[in-house]
Length: 255
Image (cartoon, rainbow, N blue to C red):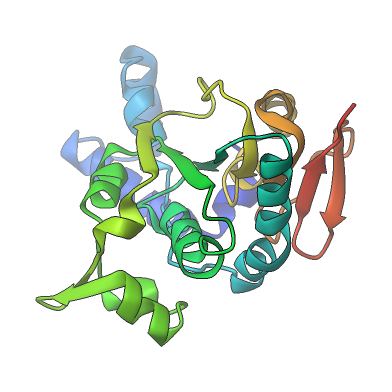
């Protein structure tokens, strides 16, 4: 991990680490460092404390608008041209499911009727088991939905006891898997990969480069990679063409 990525969430991280030190009866950071050296298994606990999950539906709406009007229709047409019945997408670092579910809502409401012979399958991965449990439940507070148009909320969610439950037809086609992108990735080639506000924010340059190469192998030729709006690929990244610079959307080159 790199300091610039963690800097904005450092207060939350420091609070978590302080609570952990208190639970262990340690007086401060030097004592915790010594504890880490004596107990190697504690590094995994520290790693968990450094992850701050921040997400909501339709986050950075211009990105989803562009996907709905340009990239997804283009991907769909290419799939039909090669005789495929499925579009494959991967949401890496999916938190509690807001990103992949947003993508599925877009597909169901805006594009499915245009491409009735195509299915969209979304694989969503995250390191945090608790976040994935929330994704499976697909039940959210009103604040998580504030970026969605009111009409979409009415169509896609059922309000119950002050929370909003995603209707089954918008959950179908979304698969969740616990996975640490630093250690493992799904193997299948994807037409669309969303890797936003994770690798290219929190990880150091050598790991960013390693994961970039791995992503290239997992995106089909002509497929699309979406980063966070404040992120970019490492300078020496080959095999990708930036097609929407202000949104940081890339296309994997065919050769």
